Image 1 (spheres, rainbow, N blue to C red):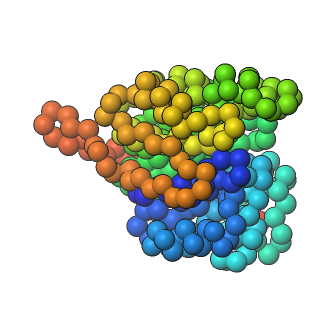
Image 2 (cartoon, rainbow, N blue to C red; image 1 turned 30 degrees about the vertical axis):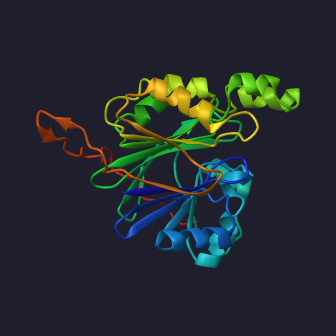
Length: 274
């Protein structure tokens, strides 16, 4: 499975997951033309669907335009659907926050995470590997750690450095929101989760970095301190693509390459078209 971050940050978020003939765009915070340019540069096809994690504009702002322009359905939770209100001509499916569902060859497993809008992290798997995406959350939870353990690739928010946020230009109310348990993960909080991630992950991508209250160097320093030297760590650019493969850098155990585990642990539910 190829995972490509197309945009990451407060100005827009979008990540493409591809396996064989199946592809899913998670979040749609980039304009249709920018998305199409990225797809062309990657040699990627139009995604089969758009999946929205939550209703903030940097994640859903262009979903309706992309869906109408490319004639693809949008998947979102009940709470997000109420907040977004897509136009009637957009094909819409709703998923439950703790029930897996399938789009083509991809299995998507959502999990609620604490944020000031109803939000989910996603574990996305094909028959051989899996990737976890967790962004826009105020604190790492035990349930989230369990959700990400066993993933080959983990995309995790590392939004701010706590000192830079405290001393920075944001007004007090915004500093309090970002630092709250329903705000965004700091580098220190990302470190706490990553050091307990387990041995399977071979690649970590740090996402949703603040351009005001963080630097790639600070985020990388914290993440690398938490992880084994064998784990590749990247920072997703705010604009521009970053691609990683879930099947790279398998661990060698007992002289034999570790076999891919069966990631389809639960029977996916059937979604109804609204």
